[in-house]
Length: 193
Image (cartoon, rainbow, N blue to C red; front, side, top):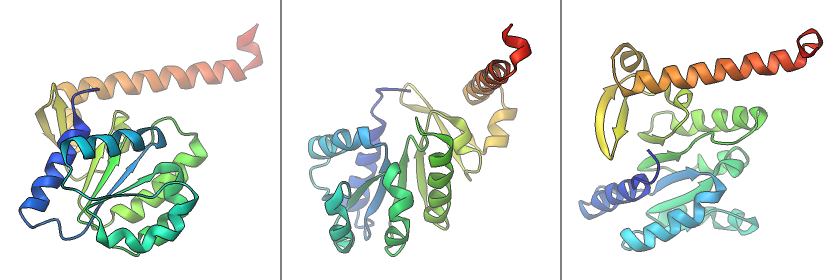
């Protein structure tokens, strides 16, 4: 669901964790570059008690040492695979992936997925995704509809249930198959005539 406050909900969770004394390490949030402004703005608006470090731009390399002093650390997918070694040197309370592979080319998606696998190993991670293939290996998926959890389970369990997740999975799978066929037809000279 777009525009239902997933960012604000994630920030509210982090603020509750901090107020309860459980946010003893920063939360690493990985997001598309276009959403950095949104996350900074919403943090200032809804969770001003959280300190934010934005690792973006050329100055980011000099700021890695500041990670432990913040509640929230923001980085972007294009930088993730470049900065993964440095980011791995720190511990995180939580890893939040906002639209993990939205609008990236296949080669970049592969680099991002490899870096994400390394970062997610042994960590609690929240993945905010519209592309359901991003979630296939998650231990637990919560399906939101109108801001409420309507289903919960693994990918395999949710695909078996007659619910929203299966409907979305069927739609996305069909669209991807149609696109693959169209691309194959475009490459086949006999089909173009």
